[in-house]
Length: 192
Image 1 (cartoon, rainbow, N blue to C red):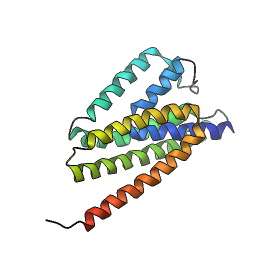
Image 2 (cartoon, helix red, strand yellow):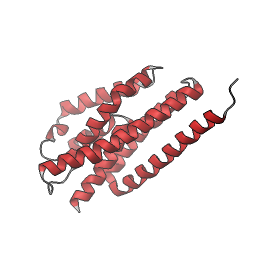
Image 3 (cartoon, rainbow, N blue to C red):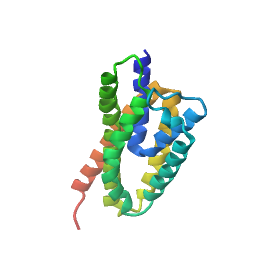
Image 4 (cartoon, rainbow, N blue to C red):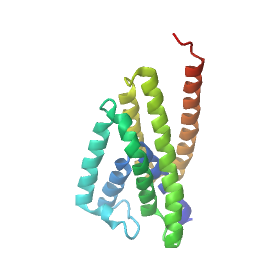
C-alpha cells in the first residue's frame, strides 16, 4: 500500500513538474523543512535551507521568464527534458522503501518522467495554440494558470495524492480534447 501511495504522490508531483520544473521541488523542500514531509534516503538534501533558497530563486526566475514574450516558447525546449528529470527525481524522492533500488528508479523514470513529459508536452501544445491564435497575447494567462496549477498540484499531492491522480488524468484528457478542437477549428476556418 505504501508503494501505491508513494507512486500517487509521485504522479501528482511529476504532473506539477510538467507545468513548472522547480515549483514541486520547492514545495517538497519547504514541506521537508517544516517537518510535513520526509524524503526518501538519498534525497535528504531537499531539507537543507540552502537548497530551499536556491529552489526559491530558480522558481521565481522560471515563473518570471514565462512572462517574457517569445522567451516562453523558447523555454519549452529546455523545460521539456528538465521536466522529465524533475518528475523522475520528485517521484524517486517519495517512492517507497519496499521496492528495490532498481525497481524504484524504473518506476520513477516511467511514472514520474512519463507523467511530467506528458504534461509538459501538453502545455507546449496549449502555448502553441495560444501563440498561433492570439499572437502570444494570451500566453501570460496560460503561464499564470501553469504556475498556479503547479503549486496547487504540488500541495495537494502531499495532502491527498489519490485525488490528484484522478484530477491529473481528467485534466490530461481535457487538454488533449481542447487542443484537438482548436486544431480542427483552425483547419476549418476560412483563409483570408
